[in-house]
Length: 199
Image (cartoon, rainbow, N blue to C red; front, side):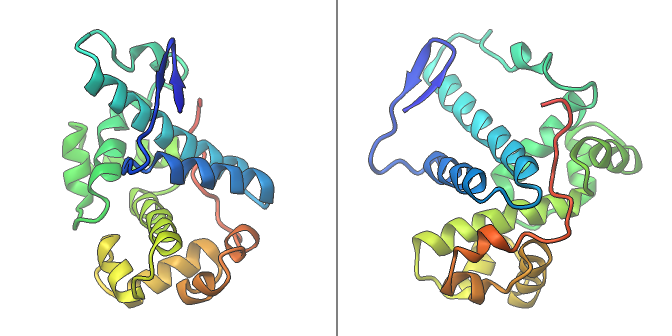
């Protein structure tokens, strides 16, 4: 069950929204308390919040029920890059150009890159790859898919690219993580994971 405002959302046993996985990831991060766990939890909490908002909006015919109530919690740049964050969350497994993300925000590519990096503390490409890696971990935890298949499902152009990015964020290979996923908690190394400012 998820609670937002005065409403509760009860998830069906076969729910495919990804909310359960995010909650488990947040719990794991709090338990591990490894470097940058707070930043990782901030990022995951934001995704969880918007997934709940999406469900609420789909169930509600009230068109005034928007994110504006919560926008006051965020810095001035957030409304400018919100469409890009939403697009990445929904289309992470598709080929993606930074220009398309900038266009979704009605910004020039240069201005978009600057605002995005200022707000998310990493370039757009790194954030996209971080989202893809988080999705890959979820897939590997739930399935027995091959690494090639996981790479494709998460939007990586090749298994080599998938492996390189996985190691960049987690410090180990996907195969090593798959053998012992507890390494996920202890191997986040030397990378300033997203710390969405103002949250």
